[in-house]
Image 1 (cartoon, rainbow, N blue to C red):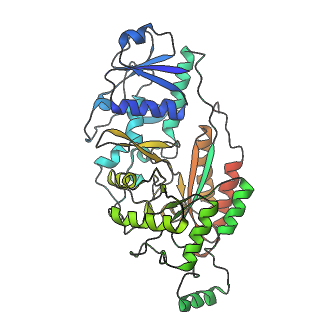
Image 2: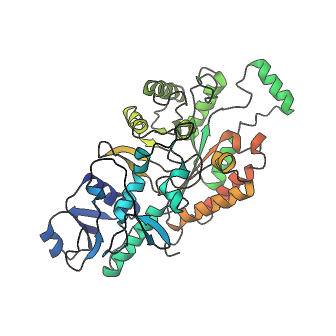
Length: 425
């Protein structure tokens, strides 16, 4: 079924956000038209996005935001919608706010282009985000809005149907150090083994993860750090024999991606070298990526990845708070705000990271379990995609991660417990 959407003028921003809400989330094909006669004469399901209603159609009042082509500080005002403060208020509309402008603002990461606030790693922090300060950081609110729009359309067009999608869970592991002691020089290796009173390397979890994948019918994705030219890049030399064997073994059974080093940030030639080295050892094409330390500078980071042939990125999460950095749990193509164009880079929003829970939010294992369950429940309600970011060092009850293995296992169990949720919940 096709939905007719009237908008005049049709801009790149409008085209992008309509496509995301209706096609990517709801699975509905749309026809975007600026032909008033065509719109008024059509008996198909339709809605208008304009300053004023055209007849008695479903009307969403627009604000100027999606017709702009500059990046500037927005003097945001707010309205109340479903007991939540939301930006871009309007009157005489189906919703009391411009849902398309609000969705674009959040999805495009507009605020990250205009804010100068950064942490000591030069990262935009979740605590400074609009979603955090309005209290919906833990909800994929754009997906919720899309379903609310669909409900309004169904009221006038009972035959209107959306696609029934399933909840998806994608576990990912970042490999900053493949082993705790196995790849160390001999004397360091012996000292660490003596201190641990064991021969088993606590970071060597790869066979265990394979067992969990089989048990829960999952497919873990690995992101492998190969650079070691900075104190925040603890990987061994890429020439290390054991390291190469780990890479080759993982590449045979799992999808692997590059984990661009801390040192490589803003140095596209270094990222290129790391990508080529990983591909050569793994003997496979590398098309996915996640930034080490979640280092992300828009638009440069994503432009560099596109130039290097990366097709998908899993970086989009906050280090300091868990939740939805782009306010969605649905993969989307990155919109380059400076160029005002849709790109080919598919962004997979990550929901929660182990270090976020323990180091930044200072949660206990029990509190972390509760936080994950709340986030996952919110994703299941919209049948979206929940992506976790863990490390090989954090799933084995070792060191600072003592008592945290249960957090990971509980997440796996909850993820496969009723993968599909009823949208009427």
